Image (cartoon, rainbow, N blue to C red; front, side, top):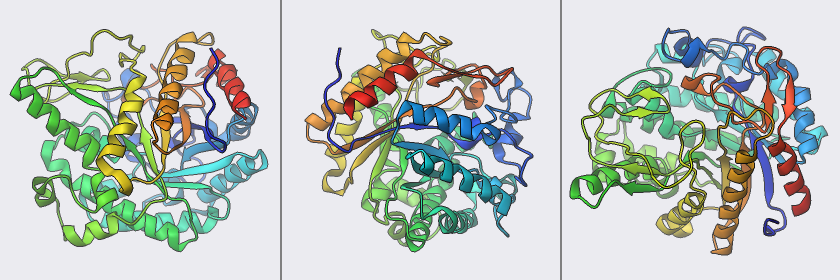
Length: 446
């Protein structure tokens, strides 16, 4: 069935992140990251996998850009490795690290693919983590220095900038429950990590603007939240989760306020002054959507998320969403949840919400090449994005996660999200059926 027509200029893209694809962790003067350290701890990553080689994009970026050119995408969203540019997170720039991204950006521009840069996709320099990481206010200022250095080198060619990717995930999985790097289990004592990431985003946005950037946004994780039942306890748990996931990182950026007084009071530092920086206006807002969440009050049973057992004490339970298919990662497939998410943001933030981009949307299936389920997933979600546009929401682009199979954080190499299959023994790339489908979609839309 033919997809409906999107507005002229709608941006079709693909996404990736540095630690998930680059490899070459010891090459070019790169310093260690929190994910290098975390993945080296036995039992933290499934199968003992690490990003040491990943898909070797560092050495094979020209081949990967060639695949994107064949795909016909208008933009490539990738992240820069902070420890590749500043091996300890501070001090002198590692020129060899920036040289790699300079070559990548030139290669993209030569193929008429707009570079869309994420400055932080979870790989904090380990030296900064040793000094407290995102619990330390100084990390926000070191991040601004990093942003200034990158925009000075790449700003003349980068079309879109995202200082942060999914600070909610870093806060919740990295600092609250310990399922991701740096592996801390602080529960609600992790809230300073949220505030300092947001402060870093505001400071970096100002640094990018000072360096000439004209298109700055953020890539935030959002989900429709559904209470497990109509009971007051389940509704209360769902409301709290909704606030923490959907509003704690959106409201400060878009309105200059935390969504509740309790959250504002829990944050460190001169919060009012920080919020003025955090709310530095954006040119657009990015939405990463994968699945809705069904949330209830704690049940006493073990909570497992993405195959990782959560520590006891979580104020939530996550019963399964029934009546829908699931990916091979166990995630429910609910395409209309994307439209629902975009509509939720438009309703909550109104005129304060800038134009939207779907900065991540994808699925994990083990099918090596003939991946009809991925095609069906993308077809449904792209239709949902179109419906949001038809409903009057200003959505301007859609980025598929991801261009190639990659290291999937605590799940290691067990999950495949790519349009391109990677043989992790030989690193050979093979285009999946979904690659050809997305290529034909883009061609038809143009």
